[in-house]
Image 1 (cartoon, rainbow, N blue to C red):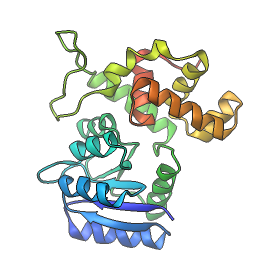
Image 2: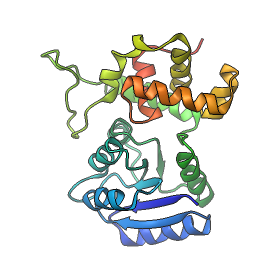
Image 3: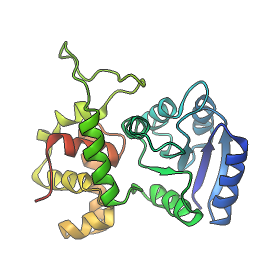
Image 4: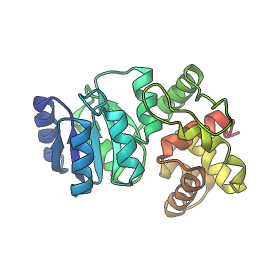
Length: 233
């Protein structure tokens, strides 16, 4: 059973999410009313997935996501009321593997949580392509004028994509193919079909690409693919 930690500053929303998830066969192992509590509980409970709100008092969802994914505590799925570019891009660059709006259906929410726990992202390919194209064009990672690396964005996140682009040349031809598939928003199953390999092999390749690029999630790698111009022909 997939184990989930809920992070949202509204108790009523947490209660509703708990009910929906538990009815769908997902175990809710804990709750957090702010980012600090989310980090603390993630360290203690080691859930499979943290369902993370973006706007919370004190430590917000972006900072909490950066810590949780940076420490390898859990995968993070953003769940927010606000479909705003700065929030979406901030969460993805902080390491979230995808995002959903709070208007999503119960079935879609449970499916997304299960997919994240299985190692996939949760953005539909067409949505991924639109977001990556629009968001990267609207808010490209800033270069450090000293040449020392990526700078920290206004929301407190550092762009993994900025440094990841510099590492694309370290990938093998097959790994570049995998990165291109990630840039197209493909799931592991779609990637396996496109490259005529098994899904297990696809997962292995994805893990190696993430490690080489220093990306915390496949969505960060997709941003790297777009920014580096690595696309499927």
